[in-house]
Length: 220
Length: 220
Image 1 (cartoon, one colour):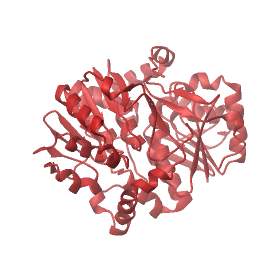
Image 2 (cartoon, each protein chain N blue to C red; image 1 turned 135 degrees about the vertical axis):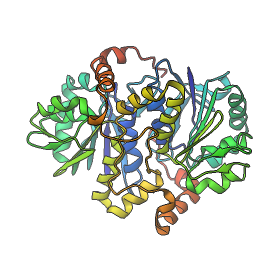
Image 3 (cartoon, rainbow over the protein chains, first blue to last red; image 1 turned 60 degrees about the vertical axis):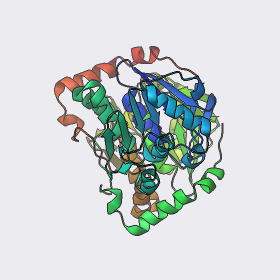
């Protein structure tokens, strides 16, 4: 089975790697990282990149199309070639996955109309504007569309998809392999339960995405 | 504040990126990825690598030394230069962190004698052999040593360290930023609570680490 993970400047690393370290451990999975052109693609934080081995224009088809999010999504939405490739690949794939505000890219590709969709909490209005029914859940499935909430939800979302693909026992074995028995030191609780001041800081950081990306120092 | 993340062939990507996406978001953090030599370093799964911008021999000092785990640890233990650099950097750093069986590298560097240490469940005996008091916890602190359990514990461990460095409110704001409100689709529970058959599959995979690494196809 083929998994194509789409990279673009300013993606969030954990959106990708949380899903990768689950799905790449499914027996027989072949993974391709694809971007506008092959080479290193910088994550939002600036010191880390992932290597795209091919351009998404070269991807004829995939079984799982996986679109991460990150502060780079706003610029990616203006990339007509990216959006077009996502539309084409999704039409032929068995599963289409987004994490975080990567759902906006699926929306721009016309894939969310009337669909039940999760996304990160600060992108809900933007995703709803594409006609999606946004749900405040860790992940959501609508047919062959599987969408996750923010960043670290990539792990839960990929475990859910692994269960669909290979059964619960395989998914739970992978969960043991990546030792995903979370225990956040300061407790859990949904984004909606966080104090307004804390939400305001993150919302401001997201609103300043262009500034954050410009301030990176990328050593590759 | 400087964070040095050590890379070696066959590290586990989520060991690194889970911690990275927490700690790199601390205000003023500067991150360096260091390996035996600069360049792409392949993760265990074979399609993903991370770029080391420097060699660890070139790292004069760091504030946080971060050593991930992975099936490549067994070979890394035989790398005298790596173990020596970890010993030297740890002596000068404010914090030394390991994730997963990366604790074995700290042990080989003589850093675990008498220390309270967490590691992944299948590496406990090996870590105890270095004189550590191994505890089956998500993360453990002993002085300026912070050690995590397997792979995805990198997130919890880094949030704990972020709380020590910058306070609980900052750590919880980063937690909201990476939307770490975990909800594993098939439930939680410690590795010790998993069925023996499931543990046996993972233990066999770990025992066959050399074979797994040799079977990789690395497209960079």
